[in-house]
Image 1: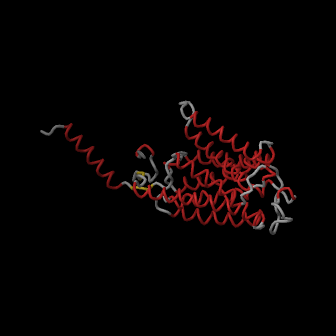
Image 2: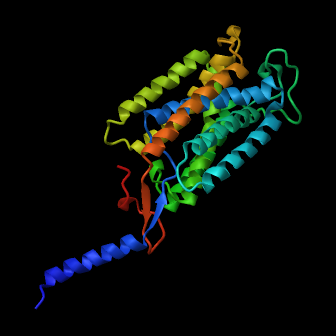
Image 3: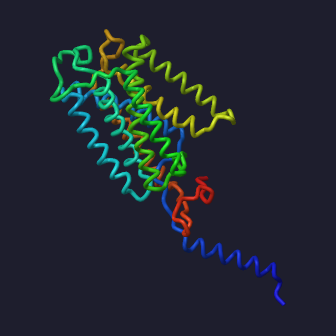
Length: 309
């Protein structure tokens, strides 16, 4: 007579084997959040500020035309990212950069008007079409915060994770990039408000945001504060840090900037971002991101079945 416990063990082993054979493996699409991630995020958002101003102001295309063009660029880069089968640093950071550039001109178009105080030196007009809705930074920020809250509410209702390393579904990634676009636009409004209207100036605004980010790092050690919440607050705040840093690099000395110009600053920042992205690509090839497991019964991602470690 066979031992029932042996039979039970064999049954469990057989079920596990069948599950392993039939389960679908989905490669992760988004990066791990490390110090290098935040350095690249700040570089990308600073470049987004200088490049957006380069097209809209230095090249005099205007906020309206530049917003349309950069939003279309965002759509193209997003499609490439969404169609990718696994995480690719070049695809990911290209979308981050495109959302930063589009967010810069979208914010400017919402908040500014056609008055001369928003024009670069020597410019009398910008591009074709309306140059701004003139809503002002507080109103523009309130609208963007409302849109961002709605995105997160919809995200919450779907039941999908907010932890970016665990986002593997198309719907989850679409919600993630929607939040990124709006948060980068909101961050631009916050950065421009700190630089232009708060009296802190470019360096003062950057110092304030940096101080808040340091507080967030300290709060990571507090168990009662969710790290996911801290991540998204930091993600939004690195955008005004990039906006104020970009303005500090490009604006005239008389206004508190270094007057390095949008073209020169953008070229240097692009070189830095490309170098960091190339390094991330090499690291990814050495140590590819682990896959997440989709249980065959539901086809939905089960975070409990996957570990990134």
